[in-house]
Length: 192
Image (cartoon, rainbow, N blue to C red; front, side, top):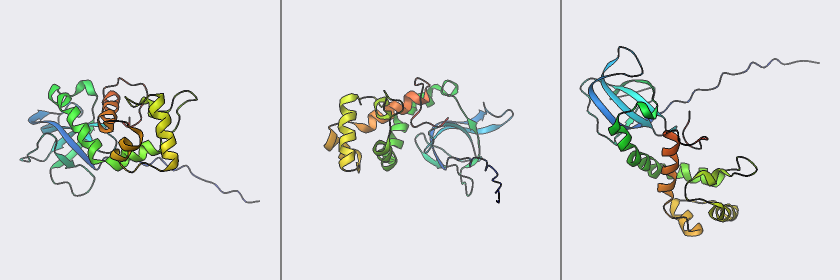
């Protein structure tokens, strides 16, 4: 008898590659790292949808809604990602831009969200993940489950055509905003 020793691998940390600018201050002070100042950018990560504070390279320019590269290698406008932020700690103007920027992300990443809808499962015996998305009640959920059994949804339009569920982008965005602001107890899209 041989016994093989397995060492638990530490979980792989996932980092955002891209983020969208919500607000910036060209002469700001970091609220996440003491003593850091410069171009302080408040952004939302494209993949994990977390609010981030980012330090821009001096003399870089930023626009609200702009998609910026924040990955590990080859940054051109960003010195470093300073840290995660809580919704109530971001500026009022960043909060005001959030709706539009989240909608942009949900639109730009259609395949990711459609795949989520195709694969969403029950969370408890009584609640299905789909029901946590605003606008999807028991009736839409039942129809969605039946339709995706026949054939997976290919796009938001396909979902609308086959299920009659109007404005999926708006409803998914609404759910994401509830998760970012802390109004929901359980997260489907935003990584903590």
